[in-house]
Image (tube, rainbow, N blue to C red; front, side, top):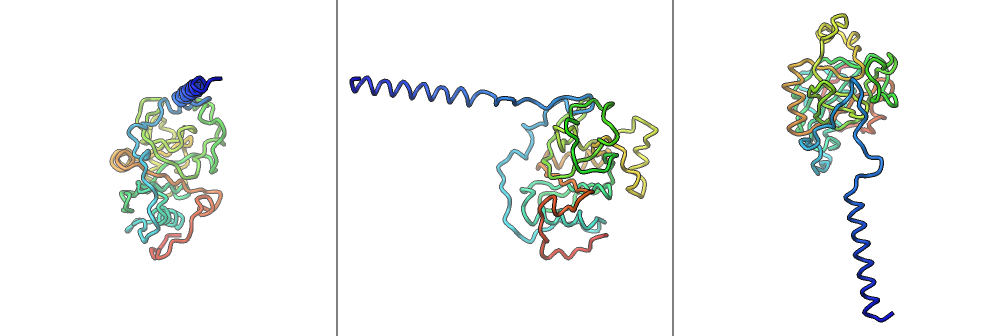
Length: 259
């Protein structure tokens, strides 16, 4: 083949290859789709266009910054995980939300570690730290009592809406687990009374979502997630928290912890 035709053929092949790459890059990934919908689950993806968690902020270097609980009472695990999140930079300079299932409490910290608020909360009625496979696909009426767990772990909070069009903060979108305003629709469940009681023993009533007082959700949690993004640490109740999150002992943590 003459040299000029060889060069032409090479150029043509290069152009064809480049076009194929562009087509593939512009096509959606195979099998990629929105999360399945359930009667009680999400009806829209989280508001990713507004979520600060998509920023490219990198973890800060190890430092002396700790979570500032002030006079707020908290368990040893809640303090340990919150301090580690700030000291290690695992929160990636976003707000930190610590969900203590054993104590049925939620703590919200600003990105610099200042406590913005703490409240009692309602959790999944079933004891367990796992997510039941396929739970996000089920209508709420088909969720069995043993499947109503609030999964433990590290989650990226994202604002969105549920099946009723209500704004919520998604913890685990695929499992349809969110943090939202408490709903007192079923009087026999006494959700408001449970939130107001002095013991966490009666706070296990939900299908897995984390129910919060209306004022706390609207004035503390939702603004924090929408303004700076948040990392949610749901503490386990069937295994040590340190092993789940891979934490280390934070030096200089002199704050007393309530046992």
